[in-house]
Every structure is written in C-alpha cells, then in structure tokens.
Length: 308
Ligand code: NAP
Ligand code: GLV
Image (cartoon, rainbow, N blue to C red; front, side, top):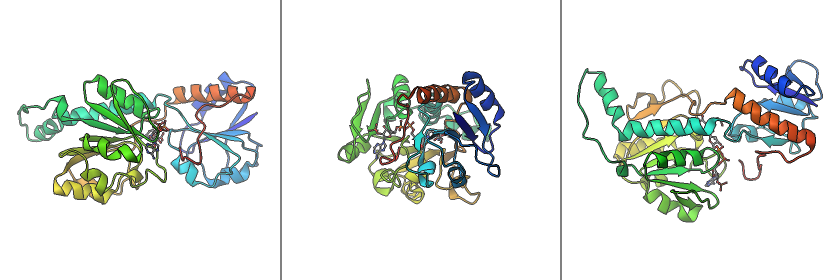
C-alpha cells in the first residue's frame, strides 16, 4: 500500500518517522505536486488542492488531519474516495479547556480585571453566581460532548443541542428545529461546536441571537460561517448580546480592518481552540490503516450527504 502525506506548511518528517515505525510495510511519502504519480491508495491531507486528486486517480481513502471537513467537501473530490476525519484525537479536551477559559473569564470577572490592570486599578468585583450563566452547547459530537460535560462538571447549568436526539448525564438535551426555541430561551452563553454544513451556515443570526437570555455571550469555536457577523454586531449594539469569544471567522486570517478587532467586548483567538495533535492523530490514523489492510470498517468516515 502507498500512502501520501499532503499537508503543506507542516514539517513532514516527524509524521513520516512515526508512521513508518508503526507500519513498516506501507510505503509513505510526501506528496510532490510537480513529481510523477506514485499510485497512492490513501493520503493524509489538510485542505488539499484539486491537483492531488488529478495526479493520483488511484486514491481510495483520504484521512483529513482535522475534525471539520467543510473545506474538503467544498473541493471536488471524486465520489469513490472515502473521506475519514479525526474523531477527538486530543481536540475535545483542548476545546473543553478553551470553553472553560472563555466562560470563567466572564463569570469570574477576569475580563474586568484585565481591563483594570491597564490602569493599575485594584478593584474586586462583586461576583455573580454560576446560575447566572446558563450555557447552551451547539453540537454534541466528539468535541461538543466533552465541552458540555466539562462545563457541567465545573457546576454550570448546561444544555446541548444536536440534529438527532442525544442523551448525556446531567445535561438537558434538545434536538432539531422543533426544540431550537426552547434551547435558546434557556441559554445565556451560546457555544458553537457544530460542523459547517448547508444547515448550519448562518444559523447564529439575528433571530437566533434575539432569543437568547439578555446579556448573552457567544463563543464560536465551530466555523466562522455559522455566525452572521453583522447580526452579532447589531445585537451587541442593542445591548441584548454583551460580547463574544471568537476563534473562527468567515474570513481567515481576520482582516486587519475588521470591526471585531477594535471592539473590546470581543475576545479574539486565531483558530487555535483545538489544534491537530501529531501523536494522537497518528495513533488514530495508524489504527484506521490497519483496519484498511484487514478489510475492516474504518472509524470516522464522513457522510457526504449529511456534510459531516
Ligand atoms: P461531530 O463529532 O461530527 O459532531 C457534530 C455534532 O453537530 C453532532 O452532535 C451533530 O448532531 C451536530 N449537528 C450537525 N449538524 C447539525 C444540525 N443541522 N443541527 C443540529 N446539530 C447538528 O464533530 P466534532 O468532531 O465534534 O467537531 C465539530 C466541529 O468543530 C468541526 O466540524 C469543526 O468545524 C470544529 N472544530 C474547530 C476547531 C477549532 O480549532 N476551532 C477544532 C476542531 C474542530 P448528531 O449528534 O445528531 O449527529
Ligand atoms: C480545525 O478547525 C479542525 O476542524 O480540526
């Protein structure tokens, strides 16, 4: 079996060394766009150009080096190629940590102390109880579940929303369009961990935001296109939404003249909420390659119709 590594801007050697050590019978190599085809059976990819599929028509499986496959599905990938994504692979814990940080920053007034430090101002805040910060997690998949569980373990009042009904201990769960209004009506801190699909694009819009509890806060760690940015700004203008913690944006990198940069109610990180971890990712891909060699079912296969 021949497997290509097609992750531009990533140092390939540490990946190849570990992969060759784990699977010495597989021929791993780095994709060379200007070289001859190698007759690859599989490829490890992140945002691969169409040229990869034109050059390697024998590809049967691609392993996405991330959880989200929106960019891949937007590329014209031959229908016969199976797309496999990372399932958690160390991202869920990072995301839970990010969400806990963003929530504690608000609920424990750390944003207030950050601002005060600039003026050497020593001023303890009055504080608010955790019950004042009901959380709603959008998406209860490999990552969203851990976000919800972690915040519930920290004592926050947490609910979650998914496409199909899910059961999680200690968490109120809601599903589909029918339960959307009830979910929003009990949520003050809305955390988006949904994949980007035709159904989730522009989901967090004016109508959604206006149904949240007053003083709402949006934490977006899913994809930028799920949030209508102008609607967030207008809801903040009206005072209904107090602020946002944003890791993903409709345009990345976020343009220097974007109004979000200058709004102190918005906390920005550059799409780093949950990074691809090499060791965990390799372990998951090696397990799947072994399954492929044995002719077994792969884990994490993307349903192209569903879009995730
Ligand atoms: P996942 O395991 O596929 O879970 C997706 C969840 O979203 C599922 O609970 C699914 O519902 C729900 N969902 C999908 N479409 C929906 C819809 N139309 N209505 C309601 N719920 C819907 O995905 P994951 O591994 O948790 O990853 C989620 C996303 O996080 C990725 O797709 C990616 O965009 C993002 N991400 C961001 C970063 C970052 O650094 N910012 C890092 C990693 C991932 P069901 O349970 O009913 O299927
Ligand atoms: C990162 O955004 C991912 O989808 O893994």
